[in-house]
Length: 125
Image 1 (tube, rainbow, N blue to C red):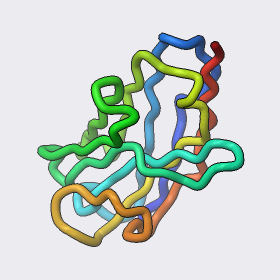
Image 2 (cartoon, helix red, strand yellow):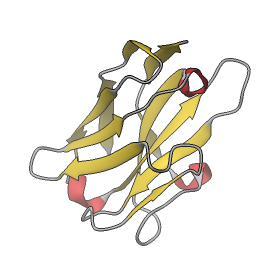
Image 3 (spheres, helix red, strand yellow):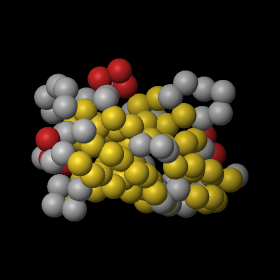
Image 4 (cartoon, helix red, strand yellow):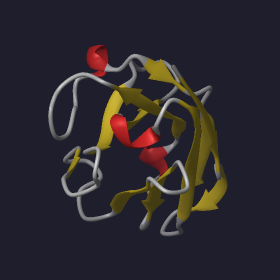
């Protein structure tokens, strides 16, 4: 089992940047494919980005492609989401998630077994 703790959220103006981190503990971090998801008020949780176990493959939702970058450091058991050119519509609670399922990147929320508690990102216009 793995425990996940997000950090790095906050309030930022439109056009600004934030870097989210997800610290993992427990079973070997490198055995998990990882992802970021977000949930805005009144909306369903949605996929943001995913990264393979080695970090060699990544995938992004169209809404963040070109603005967000996902990375991982398996030696430090950490996952990151670099968010640039933020927009008010990026406002949401951001969650990191881990899964032992699948190969490569995993984009389906239902395939993730472990979730963090979330960190709030608010982008003002």
